[in-house]
Length: 236
Image 1 (cartoon, rainbow, N blue to C red):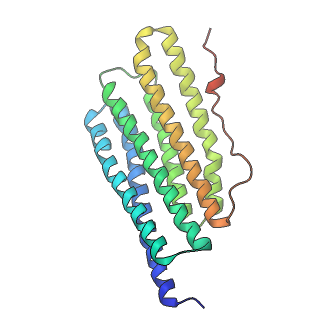
Image 2 (cartoon, one colour; image 1 turned 90 degrees about the vertical axis):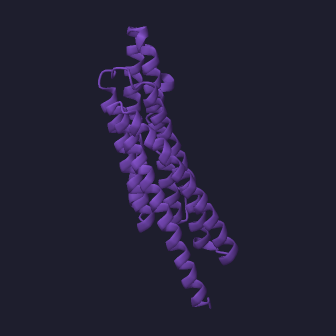
Image 3 (cartoon, rainbow, N blue to C red; image 1 turned 120 degrees about the horizontal axis):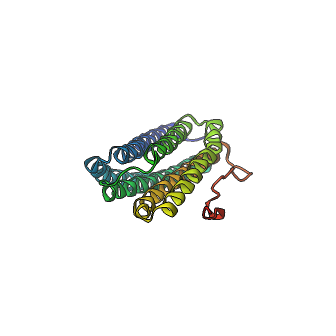
């Protein structure tokens, strides 16, 4: 029979590390939205704040890694308890990468701050970022609540982000073909769109980890993907 004192201590450890994941996730959500807002406003100062905030996100990942290592060494978890700790480590790693992509968007915003928007692309990128932020929020909620259905819903929404990216890719390609002066800003904007699309992929990976945590199995079928840019030809 397990020692109730040990069980209680482990529960407190899990609560603490969950609080750290939620805090880190909140900061990453904020970074996604502020990176998109800084682009829409062409605001280098807001972009600089996103870059600075990434240091806090990185520090939280290290704290979570240290806490997870301490729990494994001290509690020797097995079965679902071990699965929980491993899931936390994977979620933290994905959050750190999403934060990096937000920082990259902020860097490119500073580079094109003096250029004019390309045919509504700033608003489209902002909508795409908000979709990913909403997916991330649902993923974190699914983790806290142990809700595999909500996590599966996130998986299904990844194709929506892909469709947004495909539309932006074609738009940028058209503008670059029409006027060579658009090449530099469009290239920056394309990489921003790709960063957001990758955020969506990482968020979906997180959702799959939540499903694994709750059910003990990874989703069987491949998730729907709609990134068709590898097959897009230049407009004639």
